[in-house]
Amino acid sequence: MANSENGWPLVVEAQLEPLAWLPNNARLLAGPVAQVLGYVARQFAARVEPITSTSSFRPKATIGSGSTYSNHASGTALDMNGGRHPQGSKDTFTDPQVGAIRQILAECSGVLRWGGDYAMPITDEMHFEIRPGATAAQVAAAAAALTTNTPNPEEDMPLNDADKSWMTGEVHRVVLEILRAPEFQLNDIPARVLAAKVSDDTGTLAQTVRDARQIARRTEIAVQNLSS
Ligand SMILES: [Zn+2]
Image (cartoon, rainbow, N blue to C red; front, top):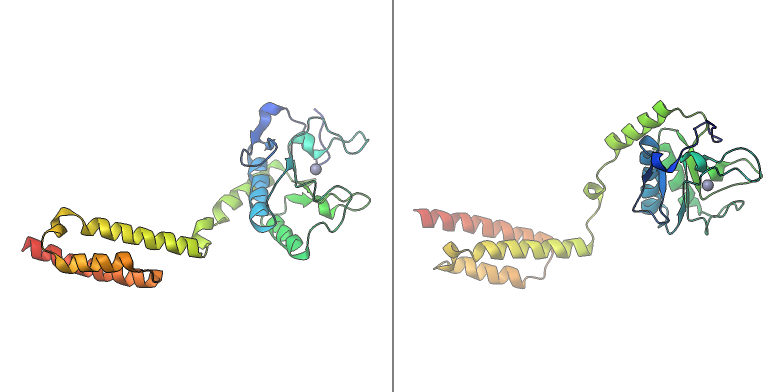
């Protein structure tokens, strides 16, 4: 079986894994290769620019008019936004974008090569691939490291105004639901007054949290009163 330029064997459709969230029916060699290049694509979309087009598996594609098989033919290469970063063009990314790309590549344990780093004559800034010499074991280790080291993005994301307003709404909703429960509908005037205050409150999340704490304390007292 012939190999592509990076030494990985040519593959057929059945060996590929779809990256369904990407445009243009993106698919790569199933397993660690798809995991690592899939990571690159997700990070690229989050940290470099949105992905509007891709090119991935191209059966038996060759490099230029030569007889060397392209890494696209082994399912180990992914092009992103080719229209904006065409083959042969240089400096199609800004410096901060290049910085982000280098950081993403570094996170993949050195198993990748970026077409922007190709020696002349032909740069290929849309193109990311498994680098020549990277073994299956090294790519598997890189994929495993990504799984262990990648923080859940939701844990690190600062709250924006929309999040805060959603959370405030949720706190109001839950608090009101609790206060409307039958056991508080009877003669629990303080709770009802508080419910009205919370529902009118357009203040900050911190204020809502303070209100919720106060309600929780009063609710505790009310429950004690009910059960005594
Ligand atoms: Zn390419």
